[in-house]
Amino acid sequence: FTIKDIEVSVSCPSNIALIKYWGKYANQIPANPSISYTLNHCKTNTTMVFKADAPFEVKTFLAGKEEIQFAEKIKRYFQNIEPYLPWILKGSYTISTENTFPHSSGIASSASGFGAIAKCLVEIEQAFTTSHQPTAINQKASFLARLGSGSACRSLYNGLVVWGETPEVEGSSDLFAVPYPNDDIHPIFKNFNDWVLLIHEGQKSVSSTVGHGLMNTNPYAERRFQEARDNFVPLKDILKSGDMARFITLVEHEALTLHAMMMMSEPAFILMKTGTMEVINKVWNFRNETGLPLFFTLDAGANVHLLFPNNGEEDQIKSFIESELLQHTQKGGVVKDEMKF
Ligand code: PMV
Image 1 (cartoon, protein in one colour):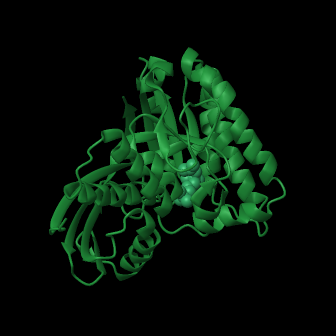
Image 2 (image 1 turned 45 degrees about the horizontal axis):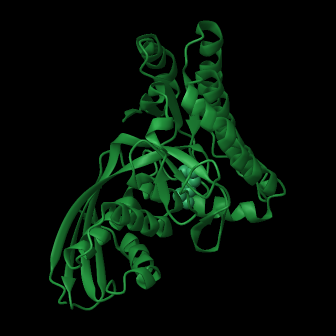
C-alpha cells in the first residue's frame, strides 16, 4: 500500500482515579489495578497532520504556540512505540493541541493529551488499513496511550474505566484499559459531579514519573499494592448496590493513601497545600452535620476533586462549596466537570 498525507482531528477527555495507580514496573506495567471516572468536559483537542515519506520530524503547537520541548518528548514516544506502528517513523508530523481547561491549573493534561495523540495515530493507521473493528481500534489506542502516560489509557473510554489485571473485572489487562461493565453500575454512580478546586496553580514540586519511581524503595509499597488489589472486591459490590457511604469511605481512603505514600517515600515529599487540608476538614464537618454525600479525591497535586451525585440534594452542596470552599483556592478557581453516562 501507499501511505498518503493525512489530517485527523480528535478529542480526548481527562480522567480522575478512584482506586489509584501509583507505582509501576518496566514498560508502564502498573503495580496494581486502578479505576477512574472519565470526565465529560475537561478535554484535549488535537489535530495531527501526517506527511508520508518525509524525513521523521515532529512539530508541536500548544494553543497556537510552538513547543520545542514537548516535540522532543513526542519524538521519543514515537520511537518507543515503533514496534506497534511500524510506519510511524516514516513521515513528519505537525501536532496542534489545546485543552478546554486552564493551562496551569494542575489538572493533569497528560492523560487527555496522550489519549488524544494515541487516538490520532490509530486513526491515521485506519486511513490506510482495511480492518475496522471498533473494539480493536479503541484497545490499540488505549495500549498506545499507556506507553505515553499510564493513566492516559483509561481516557479512551467513557464512564468508569479499569486498567490493570484484576479477577474482579473480566477482560481487564495490564496492557490497556477496559470499560467497567455498565450493567454492574448502580444509576446513582452514572450522574455525578466532579468540581475541581484549583488550590495551587502552577508546576508541582515532584513529577508523577519521579513519584512512581520512589515507590520502588518505599517500605510500604507492597502492602499498598495489595490493598489496591483488595479494594476491587468491596468496590464491585458498592457499585452494584449503590452503597454511597461505603463508596465515600473507599474513595477518600484511596486519595489519602496516595498522599501517605508520598510522605513515606525516601526522600519524602508533600503535594498537598494548606488549602487542601482546610477543604478536607470542611468537607468532613459538612458531611457530619448534614449527612449529605459530598466527598473528595486527590490527584498527584494540591487540587481537591469534590465529588457528589446528582440525586436531588446537590443544590445545598453546591451553595456550600461556593460560599465556604472557594476561598481556599488561589484565585477562586474551580473547574466544574461531571460524569454522565
Ligand atoms: O499517568 P501518570 O504516570 O501521570 O500517573 C498518574 C497517577 C495518579 O494520577 C496519581 C493516579 C491515577 O491512577 O491516575
